[in-house]
Each structure stands twice: as C-alpha cells, then as structure tokens.
Length: 139
Image (cartoon, rainbow, N blue to C red; front, top):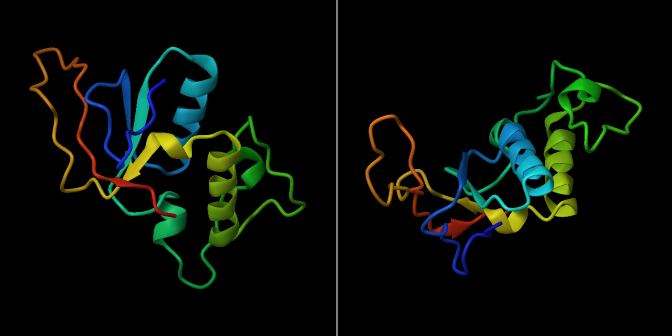
C-alpha cells in the first residue's frame, strides 16, 4: 500500500485511485487495505474535508432517510439504538471509521483544480497513471 506522500501529494503511481472521500470512497479504501494488502491506493477529494454529503450539507435537521443499520459499513456496524441519524452523527461515524482503520494517510483533499493525469490514458481506458494532488485532508 502507498500512503499519500509527505506534503500531501499523491504518489506518481497507484494501483487504485479512489475519487471522493464520502461513504463509498472510505468503504472502498477499507476493503482495499484489508482484503488487497499489496494494492497501492490513494483517495482524492475535491473539498478540503472528508465525509462527502455529510460534510457538505450541514443545514439544521439534515439526516439520512436510510437506516444506518443498512447504510453503515458491515465492518463497522451502527451501534446506536436509533436507526436514523442526523448528518453530524453520520459525519462523526465516517471520521471514526477513517481513524480506527488508519485510512487518513491515504487521503488528500483540495484536488478539484490541481489533479491532472501524469500521462495519457491509452485506448481501452486502463492506465497506471494517477493524479497529482496537493493538500492532505484537513478535517
């Protein structure tokens, strides 16, 4: 596995580049780390924080319309009695997951305008190229 390099940039090449540090991106990173230990990966996030929807939308009363017993991760079950959580609780759950499983070093943020492929993607769409990113996840 390859963590984000000192200074927050993504290594020149990774096996898997995960775009977005929301529920799906974090879950993908966990599974790569645990089930594919030889696979290098990085998470790039356009915003300066992880959490996706749950960090972006913070208006009063924002909550999931799906129960967290099914929306949450199988590897980190939702343990609270109430099944429907507010946005802040879900964001906290995502941060706990990232920290408990050591995923923060694989995350870089603020990449919306600075990410560029290091070389062209060949016909067929497969490339070992990766984007360059500049800022580690701040929150």
